[in-house]
Image 1 (tube, helix red, strand yellow):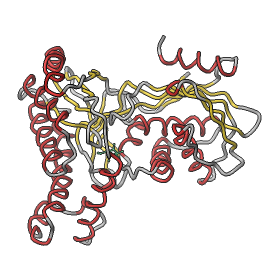
Image 2: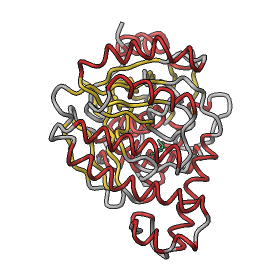
Image 3: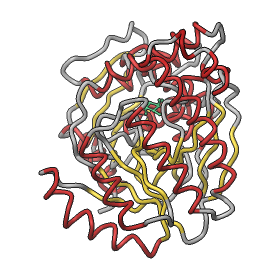
Image 4: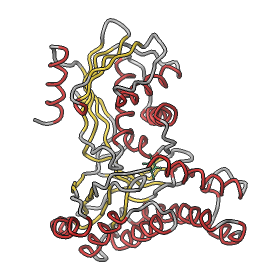
Length: 383
Ligand code: GLA
């Protein structure tokens, strides 16, 4: 059974009829540009062929009755005409409650519905299982009510829900690429203007994601701390965001900053230029240069931004040992565990799998999962 069949089955088991509508939004992997989005910088993610899917049928009242396959078919409900409270027993539903709240705050009329949700984006792995749930929810709730909200606005609504109702101060990357990703392409996103450019994944290159399965600890607090550190340096330079600080400016004022602040800023500033260069060389098929940029990005996250962990560094070294100069490998996502991404010639995939299988568990005591992914289209209604 594929996930659409599983979802239909779940829906029918709860409401005794087939759902009328289906929607999907994908998870994402970021090829380069980490912790740059909330600094008004540049990112280069792509949507992947793992996604959240929603099945829905409108109701005659104003209730949203929601169930999910990912938490044993637990059901929760709330009324769109009453103040929407967050739930402690069904905390997964706070994403839905948050998105509904933001849509209503933006004066978008909503209508009641029975909703079933399923997802095959690994949770807590840094592949944006939350962002795609937010985007998919926004798409479903707006389309069910016949309200036209653009994909870009659905991304902003998802981010606002996450910031204000879930409490993670995330940037806009994950929701934007989940909403607006393009098949076969990565997305160069200017996180200040929200302008996007499609960047082709070269023929013959594979996107390999390796999940360290290292449980991510302290992610949210460390994430928010990094964000505050970056904002403090921007204030020191009296600019809106680190996007506006060049390496030259940073070096000229190095003495005025403590070492940690200097290193945090250096990561963001150099990562922005690596990301812009990657968007140029990747579609030319220059995997060698991508390899250098991704290696520099990883070192910068490890040494300057201090968001990698030993299990992740181990995977990066194992993969690098296989691909050499032909392609790149780096940690992807917020950090402190999660996944590594490699952009590599497709004929190296088997050797990467073998290297991980024979050495990762030996060195770390952990087992990795590997997904060979396809850059995919963003959120859509499914007919
Ligand atoms: C998380 C956040 C994103 C981004 C990345 C780091 O995925 O949700 O907004 O900041 O971390 O690049």
